[in-house]
Image (cartoon, rainbow, N blue to C red; front, side):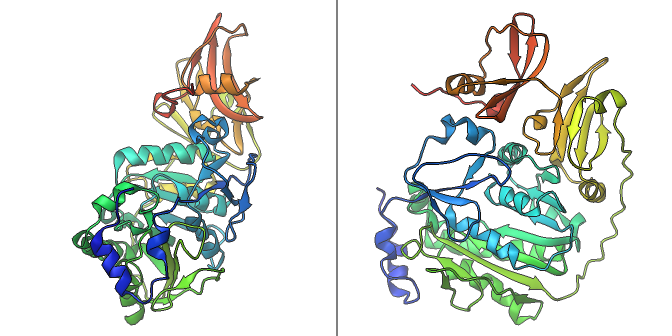
Length: 439
């Protein structure tokens, strides 16, 4: 294994706050954990519960997730256990019935999928990612998670001021020096330097100053990193407390969690808890928002053609609207909020329900995974080998009436095809496909 950076070793040895034997544990194997989807079914043998997560489990070994169709069905999400503590933080907040939640740096989607589950079809989740290619991965993971009140955009922090004074919960998983990843990602060791850590701290300060106006008075900043460096953690939050623009939120303690040097948030040291290195804290904004947002609400014509409505099943209230040839759907609150921020660059807008053609409709691929809005499609159950072939993009000979079909594995939808004559077209998106099948 790549050795730990010498300057990092020296800093840790000189810091009496840091837990004993941290350096030793960073050269051991990292634990594997997943968070189960609360509305889907999957199971793992020899698993144990993550103490601070209602749906998180540790696995005895790391499986090949790529070759599990249930992973592609959004039945669970591999996530570092410490990050799952976000659920406990959210439970401490006093929120309106329909909160506006912004996940500022959301890719690949671990925290965003947790946030979507926590909202449970209420409010709206705006998941943002500055990197365009990573934003597409984020959109894929959130589409598979299945909620309709989720929107994905692609912006720098300074481009989000249309949201000034509108956000109830701002999640900032800040770009950091990555010391908590030294065990899991050997490359993070080679990229670390004292100068890089100092640069990360400056960048974090700038990001927080830029996005602080997005919060409502009384809204919450949830701040986290995967590093042990106090300059990137509690020291980023102290100015807001000292200026009395915020107050800290008391968070629940679990065995092994270590309060930071200023008793604002918690450190997850991997020799004290079964986790990678992680830091998290929460502040409530008590100063009034200086910016008075005057964003006009865009007029969006809602409604759905009768011939399309007849093809759908739903268990919840939805509003439908059309942009060009695409029909979209979201909750009434989700669409109302989208109308206020329509000027942003979106990769995902609620659910893609259908695409219009001259005399027909093509189901949107979100309809494979949607939890509460479905096309009325016949289903075909697949075994493991067949499911992997479908996820690989293969097409096969199959005698069946022409039309669209939903493919399932272990009773979970995983893909969609269109039957044409004696064969079918595999509609699984090219960029989502498994590149290679197991040997």
